Image (cartoon, rainbow, N blue to C red):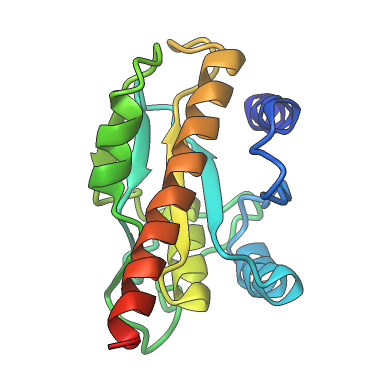
Amino acid sequence: MWGALTLSSELEKMGLGEDVDLHVYEIPVEYQAVQRLIPALWKKHSPQLVVHVGLSGMATTVTLEKCGHNVGYRGLDNCHFCPGSECCIEGGPECIDSIIDMDAVCKRVSALGLDVTVTISEDAGRYLCDFTYYTSLYQSHGRSAFVHVPPLGKPYSAEQLGRALQAIIEEMLNVLEHSESNINCHNEH
């Protein structure tokens, strides 16, 4: 908990520029809370993009998740609950990819020379991070991203992770803006 709150305040302190409204929410590690909060937040804010950040005790890099998975949820949450169906959205697709080109984001952020290693993953772990990501991807038609970060100090400081998240989110917005301008260009012809 402390690490997530520290990172949120670090990112809020650094900011993302005048054109970005940053809203930080802490989502409980509870399946039912995710099912309730994620759709409500999308409805309330109608954002261009939502970037979820989750702590992974196994991570040693900052990891960009490419997709969320619908089935395979067997672990109990903080309320000792697990969906009986073991899935996020009954009847939903097996996997939903983010519309953000994570490979491009990873490459561009890595080229910035930050003291943080950024990698790519296609499996957010079939626990609450993956459950949250899939739920958000489903709500947003792919306009979501998920970033796994290691615990503070293992090996990165809050400032290093904050700078990395700032760069990642800015690059995701650039990639999204570029892809939307290409879509609009093709639709005009």
